[in-house]
Image (cartoon, rainbow, N blue to C red):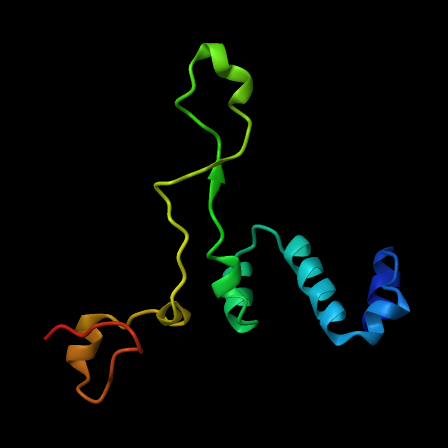
Length: 119
């Protein structure tokens, strides 16, 4: 089903090597989805559905060095790790915590794994 869609869109088709290898095909589809749906809010959920979040969200965050003076202005655009934004992903982040007011409202409801429940 991928072949007709790519041809209709005017994109080159994947090689037979990619179609034959399940891991390579999955990697290609993930990359294409990342490009096609850029800035539409799907990546967060895709990473969790594909179980790629621990690897992808634990990479360092890069930015520009805002504290350089005029003599070093050429260095501004060199990517720098933003130390104040540590990139950490823990298993509990697959689920969001349930609001404490909702937990108090329904006594049969339990908190998602890894999140604490305060009485």
